[in-house]
Image (cartoon, rainbow, N blue to C red; front, side):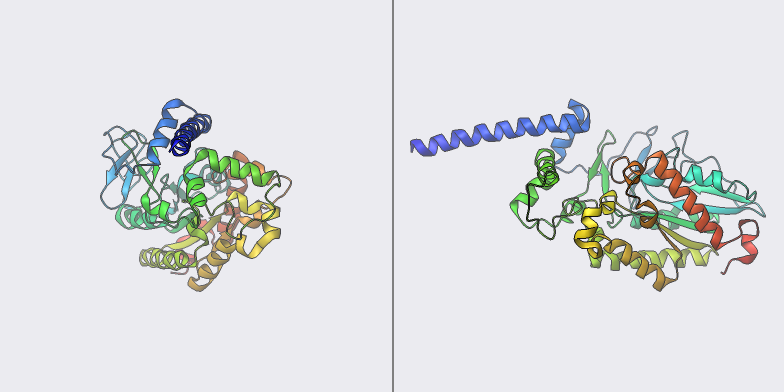
Length: 357
C-alpha cells in the first residue's frame, strides 16, 4: 500500500513537472505567456468557427469556413486583399488570378515580385486571391462562389503540401489559428509515444534534438519530419492524392468553361531539401512531387515544380522562414521561375487570341 502511494505521489509530481516544462517550452516557442496558454488549451479542446467582429480581417462563412471580410478597408467586395476591380473586365485586359494560402499571401512576396517581372505586359492585371490557411478544397469553392465574375484568363494555383484537407484551420474568437479535428486525425500515429510527441512541444523538440545528435541509430521507416505533423501528413497518402485529383480536374473544368487556363506551382516542404533524408529514401521523400507530376500530366495541366529550383545545398536554408513560408530570397526566386514558366505558356499581350480554349 505504501509502495502504491509512493508511486502515485511520484507520478503526480512527474506530471506537474512535465506540464511546467511543457508550458515553459510553449512560452519560448509561441513568444508569450498568453499565446502559450492558448496553444496548451487547444491541445485538449477544439473551438468551432467563430463569428468574428465586422472590422476584423476574417468572418465566418457557412461553406468556406471563413473568408476575408469585405468590411475591412483592405478587403474588396470579392473577399480578396485587392483594390476595387472593374466588372465586366475592360476590353483588351488580361487577368492572372492567383489562388493560394499564406505562402502567396505574404506581402511583399512572390506575387508582388511576379508583378515586377511581368510589368512589361501592359495588358496584364495580376489579382492575388490567396487566403491564409486555405486548402485546395476551399480555393476551388472560393473560385466558384466569388471569383468567376473577375473573368480570369489564367488561374495560377500555388500548391503547398499542407493543402490536402477539406479544412486545415479554424479560428477562435481572437483569430488564433487552430488545427481542425480532421487535420489531427491525419497523423500516422501508431504508438502512444507518437500521439504524445504529436501534441507536445517539449517531447517533439526533445525527439528532434535526439535525432539531430545522431543518438538514435535505428529510425523507423515512418519517422520522417512530416509524419507527426497534422498539416503535412496527408501529402504522403496516395488516397489523398486521388481526392486532390478530383478537385484539380474540377478546377480545370470550371476554368475552361470561362475560357481560362489553369496552371499549377508546387512549393516543397523545407525538410524535403535535406540531403540526408533524400539519400535515405528519395522516392518516398519526393512522393508528393511525383504524384503531382503524374496528375498534372494526366489532366494536361501545366506544372512548375519548385523542388529542383529550391534544392541548392549551399543556400537552401535561406529560402524558408519556418519550413513552409518563404524568406525574401525564396519569394524572389519563386517569382523569377514562375514568370519564366508563364511566359513560356503564352504571350500575355495577345493572350486572348492565342490561348487554347
